[in-house]
Image (tube, rainbow, N blue to C red):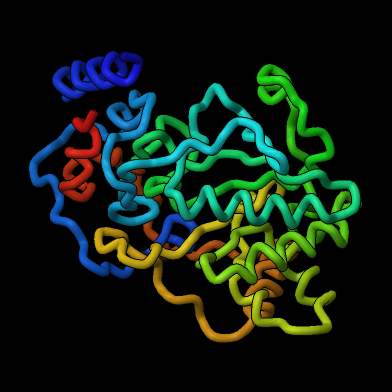
Amino acid sequence: MVRRLATAALLILLAACGPGEETATVVSTQSAPANNGDTRVAKHLFGAAQISSRQAPAPLGGYSRGCQAGAVQLPETGPTWQAMRLSRNRNWAQPVAIDYVQDLSRFAATQPGWNGLYIGDMSQPRGGPMTSGHRSHQSGLDIDIWLRPADNLRLSPQARENISSISLRRAEGAYTNGNWTQQHMNILRQAASDPRVARIFIFPGAKVAMCEAETGNRDWLRKIRPWWGHHYHFHVRLNCPPGASGCESQSPIPAGDGCADARQWVRNILNPPPPDPNAPPPRPRREITMANLPAQCTAVLTSD
């Protein structure tokens, strides 16, 4: 009954509503046609969905231009994790992402001072553009994981609204601060070593710290990508799962461990290059409309 009422409310709204690395350049595998001419603002429609679609799980489109069918809700509390900010209703994802969270949280629970992980935003129940915050997290394959050690897995829903993560950056992200620990590096190494992972975003100083500390296999460092912000959490992006023909993958990661690139980010933070006088002025960001999304996203919205 709850599902039917929520779907009915969404259908009423439907009738009434009229690229950097993180935001993702994608490589189409079998890209769905767009909803040509549909000018409805997508974030209002997807933001109104309170439950997932009754469809087979499928990530559709790209990380920043897509939606998700048949999403699964991460339980609010598990043996080695807690979902945070429950009022946002963003603890939904594709099954592969749910499995990944559970696997990584079990590893985190083996680290001194950690009982598991605090999980931030994943995706909305039907994915798509969010009403606030992220430009990505649209296809059920993005996960934000707090950098605060999850030492208490008995937080109440209200406590999860009020508690904050901790920042690990110093000097605007050029360096790590005293909150950075070996446990953070161990968890990030484990996170990036999983073959399901395409990229992990974190502030440049953390990437450089790991580059300097790693004395063994450095292959995992390639997936750790410096990006603005990301000092309270790290952002895991998964590959399109096998058989997901409507999913669009991100461009391949450049060769090498990426450490030289991260060090250049740090130099640019400490000594910002002069502005380019010939650079065009920034354009206002346009709202994503249904015309910008795969055609299947309309079916995701109208599904039971």
